[in-house]
Every structure is written in C-alpha cells, then in structure tokens.
Length: 252
Image 1 (tube, rainbow, N blue to C red):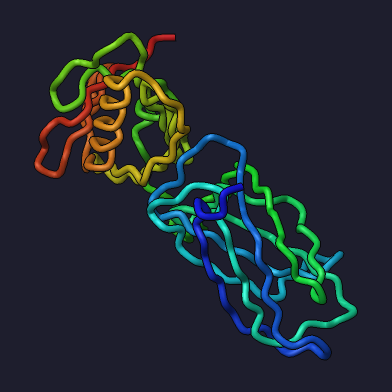
Image 2: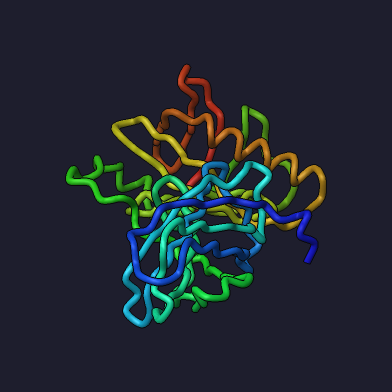
C-alpha cells in the first residue's frame, strides 16, 4: 500500500478521565470494497467504544478532502487517560448529507497500551435520513417508484445505446444509471420544486463520449430546481425554468 496516496485525517477530542494511561493516539485506515466515489460533502467519524458493551467513549468527525478516495488514513487523539485494564474497539462511519453511507458492524478491537495501526473495513449500509418532527411534503405519486429513462440533456438527445435512468423512491432516495456508472443521491420535493443532493457513483471506465455525457447528466441533476410532470413524461428544470433533463416513464 502506497501511503503517499492515502488521504490523511486527524481527529482529536478530549476524553473524560480514567485512571492509568495518559493520552493515547490511534492510527489506521478506513476503506471499503465497493467501487463508489464519495460525495463532495462526505465526512468520516471514528468512535472509540468499550468492549464488549459497545458504549461510546469518545469520537470525532472530520471532512474528507475533495481529492477523496480510499483508503483514508486517520489519527484519533484521545487527550486524556484510558483504563489500562479496559478493552476497547473502534467504529468508523462515512456519511453524507446527514445520512450514513458506510459503517463497520462490529468494533475493531484495539489495545490502549499498544496503539498500533488499525485497519477498519466499512460496508455500504445507508442509514435513515435525520429525524424530523415534520413529515416530508407529499410528492406526486406518478413521480415515485417508477423508472424514468433520460431522453435529452440540455435539449440535446442522448447519445449511445446505454440508457440513462432515474428512480425516486417513496423515501426520496434516488438513483439509477448514468449510462456508464450506477449512482445514488437523495431528493427534496415540495410542490413542483425538486432538488438533488450530491451524487455518489461507481467508478467504472467507459468510452470517453459516454463518460462525458454522464458528467453532463450529473451536472444537470445538481442544477435542477423544479419539475414538470405530464402523462408519462418528466422535465427537470433549472431555477429559471429552462429544461435541463427530459425523461419518459418506462412502461412495464
């Protein structure tokens, strides 16, 4: 592993006082096997828990740099004492827009007396959206739980033979195919206003023209502000009402 390619994050928090060991630093890496690019607002949280109970002792969160990929090197500084006789583990989460994308299910055991490198493998396991006391505004039922196929981007017809698709679930998670890579994002819908969060996508390589078209599609989604829905067709518009993406509903 070429350490020069790692993204390094320093996480620092003070821990409540325990008898025995003075401040400890846990170093290691966080990685995942899925071939997905991280959204630009992705954040890493590393938490020290006690074992076997899993009670959190201390944790810290830091933004992942825009050049981000994996593995991500971290350094968690516990600026107080740990119990020399205690047993601990590390949990890691990568989140975006308040939703967990990747996490490890079981804590990775660590030794407070010998804080050597720790390697944490996290898995794609999106968590629920942050709790809100107010229910989300209802979206038109014809818009949800359907496969929409993109027919145009910026008024230009789709090139190539691979479909670009969009599906918006009832919980407002969205995703589909960009023509090369699969992607996922989330939406907010209120009336005829709609917005898409940062898209996370797999990282497959395709023909240059497909990759360029996919980049145009993702950029168009990021600029969408409204929609028009009419008998099996969907138009995604910018804030000025200019059509950015045209789609038709797949007939099952």
